[in-house]
Length: 129
Image (cartoon, rainbow, N blue to C red; front, side):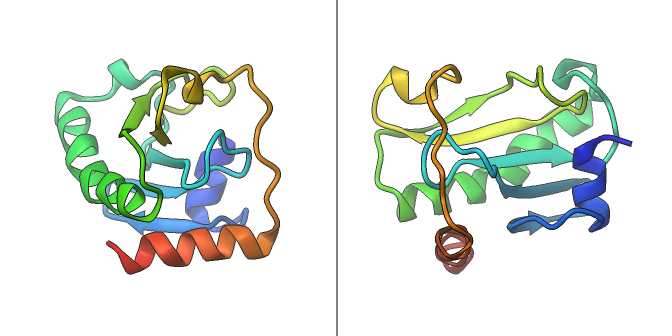
């Protein structure tokens, strides 16, 4: 069972943003930018492009209102979609507010946020969903 499956099951706490029958979205706890959110299918499949076709399409539809809410909360040039997925063998999509290409460089230092900051970010995004 991957760490994402444990988060989905509620075995590991998370800052949940949205959930459907097929997907779960939550704040990345090592974000590149404030509002950095992960969208994860509930089925445990390692690579995004190994997901069934209907999951790929529905994943973007599920992510769309979340991305729009993030963009409202954290004004930016766009919300980037990144599918790095090397650290956890469970397909996932990163939604990251960016102003320039370097904002999605995963080699840069991650933000260190307090629980209160995460809760405020979560509440703000949820208010705009």
